[in-house]
Image (tube, rainbow, N blue to C red; front, side, top):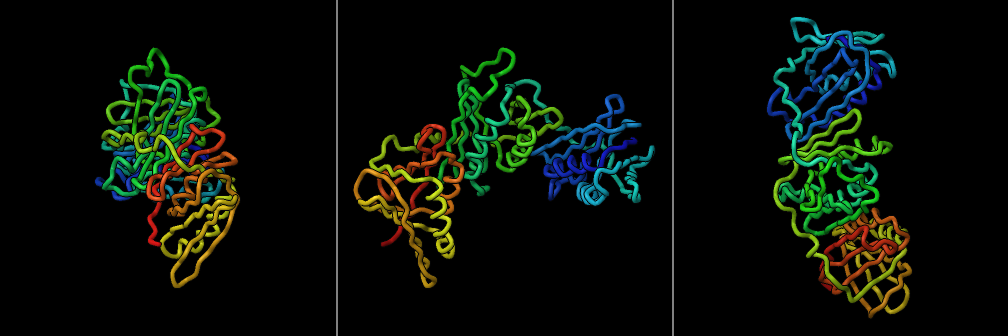
Amino acid sequence: MEIICNQNELNNAIQLVGKAVASRPTHPILANILLTADQGINKISLTGFDLNLGIQSSFDGTVNKSGAITIPSKLLSEIVNKLPNETPVSIEVEENSDNVLIKSDRGSFNLKGIPSDDYPNLPFVESGTSLNIDPSSFLKALKSTIFASSNDDSKQLLTGVNFTFKKNYLESASTDGHRLAVALIDNEEIVENNDNLYLDESDLSVTIPTRSLREIEKLVTLKNSENSIKLFYDKGQVVFISSNQIITTRTLEGTYPNYSQLIPDSFSKIFNFNTKKLIDALERIAVLADQQSSVVKIKLGNDDLASISADAQDIGNANESIPVSHSGEDFDIAFNVRYLLEGLKVIVSENVLLKCNLSTTPAVLVPEDNLNSFTYLVMPVQVRS
């Protein structure tokens, strides 16, 4: 194999696919990046695959001789990253050995590769469901919910985000058992299914691991100018394909909890806050709340002010009042301040509604101007008075 390419393009591709290289590989070859070159179309492809998440990135270069080799990811990344920007880089693999020669105008590196024959193939979906998705809609659904997924590996199914692709809209949801985020994105922004496949009979519902979604988010952000990204799903595998990148990931198996039944049908108390003022006040009070239990108390009297406070024993306390409009009698409720802030920060509406029944039952935050677009349910914290 013999190729010449631009340092910047090679480096970008290595950084991208490196995210899918196993940090503790079960087999030595999984610590490597697969490099393939096709002389016929002058395309260079790099692949990282840890058997759960796979990323492939392709770019144009000069291919004097086709071939494939796997190179240690960490070494390749560090070498190419330190080569002069935008300069030509040539990579050659000797005919009868696995020696890889990397040359730039400053010098050369000789590395030992592993033949590509043992590198696992990226799973590709040949049958099953295929959709065209709009990058900005998918990104919106992902960003609105990814933060509420669980970090607890014992709750495997909750360590991802559940996406339901319906004919009229895309719904995403995540929960860690303490809070639940649900986003609905209108179908106008989603390109309908290709060919003659319609989702009337059964909607496509998949739960994608958060770790994979962080990489998919980067791909979709890069491709936001594209009209659509192709999604294929079959037998526990989801593949996202854009013009020169492929990401494949296993889905989390099992039936996602029926979260809609967790959201109360009606509320006896509704409080209307300015979103920015509420976030700013919570961030200031959080300085003290974070010292101990992360708990903030919200006290709502019969005037037009809400009192937000935190009490860190033996350290101090903080208190701030902000405007609120509400109907109903006096009310006190307490929350984990981080949970509140993370939910509020994805609400783009000027005002936010906090809906409650009791200080011990789930509370819900929704944007005032588009009530159905985002629902954030959060369990209050019980405070001993």
